[in-house]
Length: 272
Image (cartoon, one colour):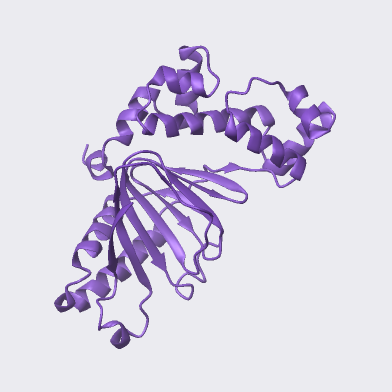
């Protein structure tokens, strides 16, 4: 990863402010990259300008595309993977500042104002002469951030060890054609018990969960530049028509439109 670091409080002035509460870095990379499981003592806002990033925590899987951000509270063990080239920002909020904010991760859409604020803050971070205006802009950014509607678009993973084993197997091979009875057998459950427990554990029926998993994996592949036909086959769809229908239902885009969207920056999209 090629990252340009910046601080939201210019070096040498932090002590005069009393609370250097926001810092981070601009991100620009050209290749796919995966991080090992790690943890932050601070809250993290990961905003994507172009490309696609996936983040996995113990109980959920998130996919963040252009013009979106993920809020990750302090103390969450997580791992991340970029799917091809990506640009964006990784911002860190002190635990004190975010103590009264959301204690669960969520994804939301960046507004034009929020994106502009992030870009301006990253450009002006080293200019000490703009210190007062810089702090006002950071506070304005925080107000805008707090007001943005949140989405619940994660893929929940079961906590039950038997069901978790099934979820991990499908995550490794989303095209696996085995039916529910075979998965129930693998979990050591009756079919009825498997269906009931999976729904109770994840809040989703197994068939719905598996389709969402397939679409998420297809999104990753399309973001990496794979052909639509290859992405469809890799996640278990023999019919392009069925794949396109399921993909549009899950994302609101056709597969080809989504692939194009991943190559366009968030700023360009907002100006359309």
